[in-house]
Image 1: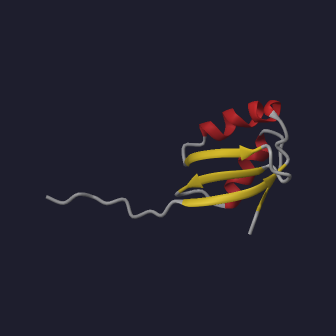
Image 2: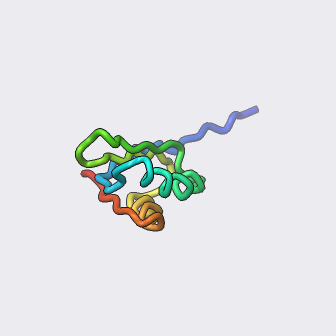
Length: 79
């Protein structure tokens, strides 16, 4: 009997964002939470660039930027 091993690699994507406060978080939370391909996400509101960190094994940076845009905010991939 063989066990199937998940060989997909988890990516950690970091974005500069304009998610500035807890009110902003309340707007973006439902959209990011409903994205099934995001494993975890968080925003560092203390950082000057309001860093959004997303862990995913499927999404590309563009996908995350579009999701954030749906909530009315901007996210720019940090390279």
